[in-house]
Length: 248
Image 1 (cartoon, rainbow, N blue to C red):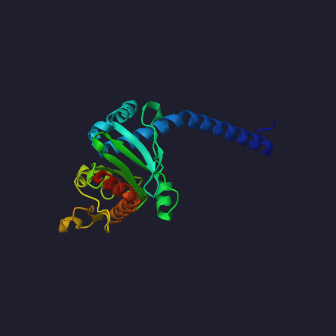
Image 2: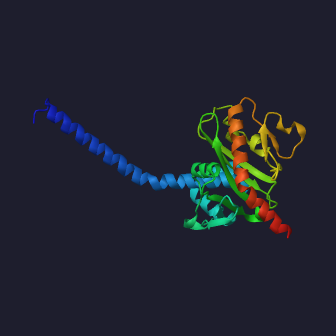
Image 3: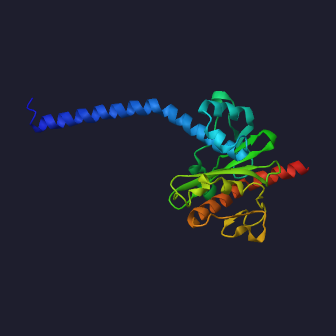
C-alpha cells in the first residue's frame, strides 16, 4: 500500500483510534472498582469525621479497607427517608454490603422540586445521627455532613468539602478545622426561620443557630448557608416527629 496515499492515512488513523479506544476502555474497566472504592472510603471518612468517630487526620491516614471496617463497627443503622419524613428504605452497613446515598445532586433537585427524594440517615453509636447537605458555592458544588446529638437538633460535628472553591478563601470550609469546629454545640431552629444562619457577624446576637461566615468568602458562605437551610428543612419533619415520639 502506498503510505503516501489518502487511503493509507484514513486506514492508519482509524486503526490508531480503535486501539486507543480499546486501551482507554480496558483501563476504565480495571480502574472503575478502585475509583468506586476510593469514593466510598472518602464519603465514610467525611461522615465519621462529622460524627467524631476519630479525629479527621487519623481517618485520612487510615487505609480504605480499615475505613470500611471502622464504619461497620460504629454504625448502628442506616436508612432513607422521603420529604414526608417517613422511612422509605434501608442501607446496608456491614462488610461488603455497605451502601450509601452519595450522589447528592439528584436529591438536592428532588428536594427543591418537591419530588421523590431518597435522603440518607446514618445513626452511629451513642445515637449520633449524620445527614448530608449539598449546594452550590462560588465555582461549583459544595457539600458536607452534619452530625446531630440524640436530641435531633444540637450539632455534634460537621465536615465540609467542595469541588473548586478558591484556595485560601472559600476552600477554607474544608481546609480549616476551626471553621468546622464552630458548628459543634450549635442548634438547628426547627420550627423557626431561618433554621440556621451562616453569615457575616451571625454570632454577634448570641443565637444558638448561628455561625460566622468565612471572611472574604461571601459567595461560598452564602452557598453553604443555602445548602444547610434547604437540607435541614428537608429533614425537619423526620427530626421533629422523632422528638415528639421520644417525649411520648
